[in-house]
Length: 106
Image 1 (cartoon, rainbow, N blue to C red):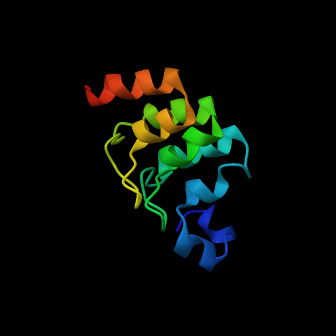
Image 2 (cartoon, rainbow, N blue to C red):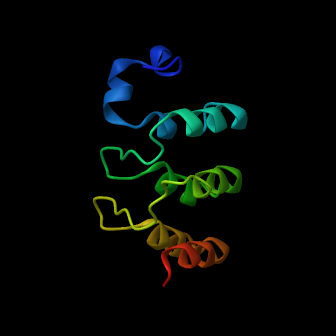
C-alpha cells in the first residue's frame, strides 16, 4: 500500500483503481506521481482503465501522461467492448482518434 492508498477508504480501493478515484480530486502533479508508482492500466468494475475514463473528460494533460506510459495497451476493452479508440470516436475527439490510430496501427 502506498501513501495515497492509506488515506482512501477500503471500499473505494476495492471497487475502482486509485487513478480513477483521484482523477478530479487532486492536482496534476499528484496524478503524475501516481502514474509513476501505480498500476496505471488497472481496470475498474466496468472494465475501464484510467485512459478510458480520461477520454470523455477531455483532459489532455492526463491523456498525454497516460499515453506516454510504456505499458499502455490501446486495445484493452471494457465490459461494453469499447477500447480507447471507440471512446475517442464516441466523444468526437478527432485529434485523439488520430493519435490512438497511430499507436494501434489501424
